[in-house]
Length: 354
Ligand code: NAD
Ligand code: WQD
Image (cartoon, rainbow, N blue to C red):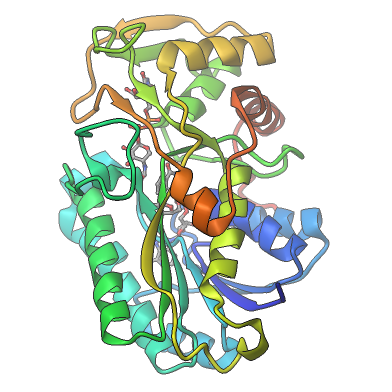
């Protein structure tokens, strides 16, 4: 394994910052492009403090073709990790065009710039949402793909674009990483998930109940066909997820002796599930959090949330076989690190910290 110049799109976001920490710790050189539409400069400043390493930053939108082309020409990335995207399911239903424009057109702009460069290594943030309501569990990568909302469709479309690209030009190595439910934070408590407004996702909602910012957790559905009637998901610690990106970048390199000039024959396009393989219910998660934090999480029974499935968890075997990666951290670490981050930063990142 060697060292690469890695372009990280959306590197100021939740998963991006945690991955950046691992990328820099592994000795790689990094450059972030982010429009800061859903993130703050403080997040990047804290990555610098945590790693004691520098990296470049361009504040620009991926759809700004000129800015992206100039960045690619100047930085000459040898691999790209592409996080930049909008991710709120409900918002995507209300504003499908905004989602296709940002997520699909943004990716096309990036790919056009890369086509003019030597870089043919690409790691994409996809999602288990591409499996829809599962036919069987655990879900492997051959499970049929179907989506229930525009957000999911943007992921599916980008996966298909990348598949076509690899078929047209065999020098590409493209990893489609299908994340299950990322939670947790860096053990330092300095970086973490910082949602705007009322959190859509379970863990940030629980941590805000624990700080007193919200009164109780609404449990969306208590009559599912699951052991305790509440929804079951495959929660994965963001640090494990971050490390999976490093493993995926390594996988994209066919020959470390010619990293800069490209590999000639690439690996094509392949999908990998990133999860633990273990399902956890809403009630189990709330209890695990109470145990670790010592805070009570009051629960309120609420109706099922539209579009939710009963159970969803991964067969992560392919990532182990082909990337040599597996999740190491469990529920206790997920809850403890989320709580460490939220209790130290009850309002998230400060507006003015640089
Ligand atoms: P995030 O919102 O914290 O990070 C995304 C970053 O991309 C933000 O900093 C945002 O400002 C930036 N961005 C968005 N559109 C951009 C554009 N057009 N140009 C430049 N920058 C742009 O989200 P996250 O949770 O870190 O997710 C990262 C990626 O992983 C996303 O693509 C998301 O769809 C995917 N994903 C997330 C989850 C999850 O539960 N968090 C699950 C599966 C997949
Ligand atoms: C988990 C469980 C809820 C909040 C979403 C996206 C998916 C992916 C990850 C990006 C479910 C229950 C939640 C609350 C609750 N993102 N819940 N009370 O829905 O599995 O996945 O994020 O790709 O596309 O759909 O995650 O954290 O929202 O919910 O009871 O206040 O917690 O019903 O069973 P989900 P989640």
